[in-house]
Image 1 (cartoon, rainbow, N blue to C red):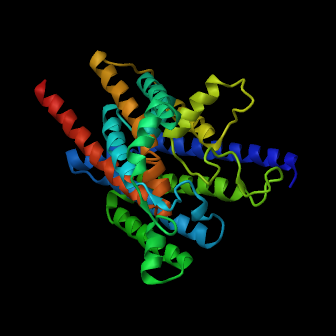
Image 2 (spheres, one colour):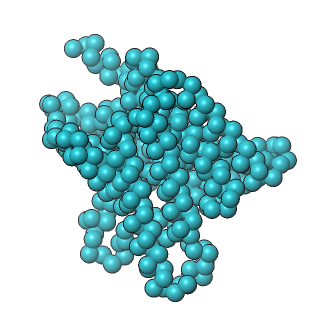
Length: 370
């Protein structure tokens, strides 16, 4: 493969990533798919419909990723979430902070981008704050604090820190077959629980769950198979084209928002290039905008008062810091990372839910004081 071929393939990967993320944004805008909304409905109203939608999406991604890995189309050990270090403290601390922040900011990072596409100016401000604080936690002041504290605490594994690798070592079974069985079993369990409720067996809920799960799988295929080069002509090493991590990536939105701001601010720098994550953030906004305009639901929305502004600023900052520390958002760790059976993703997801529940209790306390 020549350098020109690499260039053309990179462009194809970026356009495919944009298309997948645009579909994701359209689905979320059309169906109201939302992790925070699911927790709010379940905890406050006893309505588990959106939580079952989320379980359907996660189960689809889990089972699909197991099959992709088994067929050799995507190697789970080459993904962003694969590591011999189980960063459990980073996942827990970052997840708690992110979860609390998404309640203050009225939604997680992906939902924020979807709301931007619908004309929500509050979400635009939140996304800018996520990008600024996220980049600071990647390479700035809070990055130094992160590296000097929570990132120092980890459990070292002989292989990948994942459920499938742990089970394979414990049972003495081949890693590949163990990953397939574990992924299919857990995925099927989540799908069965989701579809057990009649409310989820509707077009809207099926589109939400299956659509989001399929979008994550499509992105794994784009970065892990289409964009995979066994031997790059310049480095003579394995490469995953147009990814920030130089590994296979799926949908995730905190770090990509940060890298997107960096790309915009230093656009004239020849060293700055578009990546799958960056185009994904733009794709979600475009997909959401297309649906909201088609449904005539697009409308401008601003802050109600200074208290509303303050809560959204704090929420965005917490999501930026927490999302980078936890290595992902509710989509990045909760669905994309979970599909690889990463132990860090499991810890981050649990912490995000705990943080969100704490945030909901805080909001209820505020309302009771009014």
